[in-house]
Image 1 (cartoon, one colour):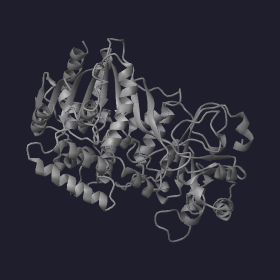
Image 2 (cartoon, rainbow, N blue to C red; image 1 turned 45 degrees about the vertical axis):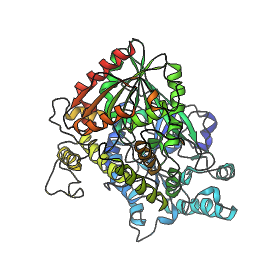
Image 3 (cartoon, one colour; image 1 turned 45 degrees about the horizontal axis):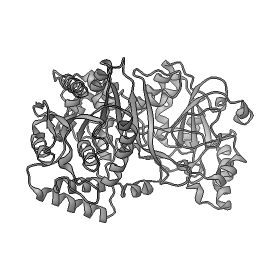
Image 4 (tube, rainbow, N blue to C red; image 1 turned 90 degrees about the horizontal axis):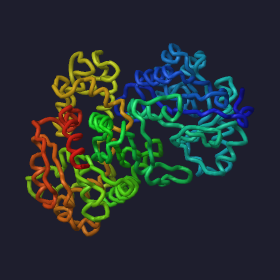
Length: 579
């Protein structure tokens, strides 16, 4: 049944996933590990949700559609998975890249291999992958009509569906596509329902940094999928900074429903690098005790990477401390003003962001019962003001040179890649030992442990033999719906943080002028390297009421948040504060 014939009768709900590459390049955010792809396919099948052919999109019953854009050569890496699992994949091809001599895209020989596989199907993705809203009529014909004819000749099939490059369209482009295709896909997150526009269908784009838990959360849009812990997600603020009909949330709020109701709410506010997924033990313990939990996911994790890269990075340049404070105020207005009493659990510069907001307004004071701070940032506390001045100068130079984000993306993509392999095959010999600069045959878990520990970063590091957590605890973190790492941290934000650290939390521009007025109870959990940071925070916020502390030996922030002892401390302190 063709989509064109079935469109009017479409009554199913659908999730469509958009992939690009399937390979072992560690730094490429668009490349999904073949092993991860196989896990995702098996997860869908285990929940007995059909993975459909493209011509079954409008058929009966809820379903999943797998698509891959552009026509990358690495798609050949997952043909064995498609054949073993007997699931179809629709490739949206760029016509102009299919020619002899290409390296990363499929060539005519590769296309013959794909055409011989009955599980691979095809759609149109233009001739040259342009931003279609910028095309005139002649260019539209070349990118749409000519590419459709060329691809149909190459594949020997009729291409009934289209995918917009970058997901960018306007009404003119949509109306043009309507003349030649029965449906078209964008790249906006969300499921497709009978009410979804057939010519701007939703697709979840999958990246190298997509966690197993985030994938499970995407699947949970269909009622057939059941997640372990019920939660709802709400977007706080939207942006159309990339052009018409492209929206993405600035902040997301994950609300977890407690088992029972002991009263109160605990809100987790991550820092700019490490997400709340690592704190899943504390969330779970609080939920079991009847305490509601929520997690704020900042704009760092919601950057739509699948956009023209220059535009993505250009937008980041304006994301300073003021922007993040505005986001936090919106989040606090929605969450705190609706709750009678809340405890905030935060770590790193998440503590700074919370305190900046509280130092600029008193409207949340009656709603917050206390703060549990894990390794509050104040980097290099005790080293003198010259350190902050030097940092500010360096960040300003980087911004003047056109740089927009701290260089964390490539590194964290490597950590995420190694972590995925630890989750799937911990004791298998790693494919990445040489790429990470090590020699010999190291297992996946041994390689990741070495990489994290050799980094000697106070927030990173793992010891699977620690008495407070296990390898299984580490793996479980990757099954959580909220992010574990932020891929990008804007330089402007880091500069502004150093500025308020330098000036002891006084900034007329930001409205941060009354740090001494914050008089909430606070409990600190900190490792040895953060002892000076705790001391510094007491000096800057003398009105904070000191509560019990949990000083630890020199272990990383990740290890702290995975610790059973720490989750017990957080749940106990939160219960005291809420009472």
